[in-house]
Length: 509
Image 1 (cartoon, rainbow, N blue to C red):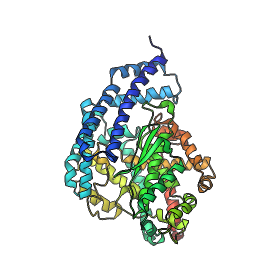
Image 2: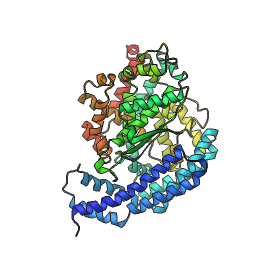
Image 3: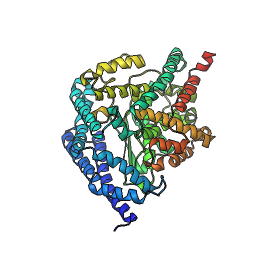
Image 4: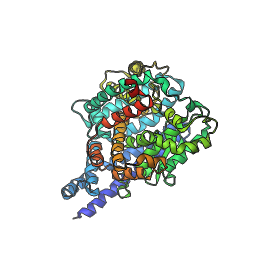
């Protein structure tokens, strides 16, 4: 009879095969977003369907179930955070969920995204939701079938959330959003009354696109992104993809007339990439090698993009080099004025370009619409109208077209309901981590101002990155900060930062 070590090796051998198949699929998806000819869509959909079906069948085999059962009995006495115990625990969670999904459904889901993706792009370009509507109807149906297959007690969204943010429920999310609305709505109103306090015209001067890309890449390398284990490209929607520890890729998009799009897009994606580059090599080619959840992953990108990259110490360090690259656009603008410009808060249409204050309202909108589509109270054909009405209610803007409305995100071209809440969860986690980091590194701002980013990255490596998926988000937060997820640090952070930027405290006095 095989001993525990031999059974672990058997299990890891199967999981390595599954990982390789999934990573091959990721490489094909990256290629579709960057270099694949338009004519390759149909073949690519079939290739992805084949790979992901094979990975699913291999992972959900009786062999994996047998090994998990035997190892659970034998590893029961190991500490909770041991690699071996965590591997069995997390793989069991994934296995039980995956076993509920028929292979044909997995293949259909894999085929749906690549098929819908180019139609979404064309519909977005043409500002015509009707082109995309039949594909979204199919994706909504597939999301429902996934929820039904996994099962749920109260809300179908719970089943999808359990796949992405383990431990979180729809009701808990609604409570978080209610707390955020109570803080955000009056803050947005206060800022609107003092809108002239911050001027961001400098961001809309002509910035050479090639220089933007090269400068932003140099910055993220300084932050800690290892270009020897990555690469940078352009795509319609910025993203990061990890083919393995030695191949973690990022993309951005660039506009000559808006500085933030490329620069902060690349810092954001580099935050994701540094997370994956920091996961312990010992857990590679297993289900543990990835972020703890989309929300935890987003916390890393939002932390670097906003809590570091939109901070005054950051720009006191980088602004001299930025003015050397862009002397004409930045003529007559000092570091503090530029810092204020990149932090201007105002309601806007595009989620990925939204400021920190209004960003979570974009996510609330999508969270509510996904629930209504899933539960059948909203029809796909009525989505643009519902989007526009809610956008007006939450952000006070009349949506001018589908491109800046219901078609702006790539996510609904894939079967991905349950992903969007991770963006708000990421904001909250990032602020909570930074609060604890400042306790552990009291001179953090001074180090950032000197261009010393290793202490920030080192703290994140130790507290978050190396663990991969060993812990659920709340387990990870308890270990890193001593308390479960809470919105309080983020609310305090934005109130303090924007109160100072817009002189709100002085106005109240």
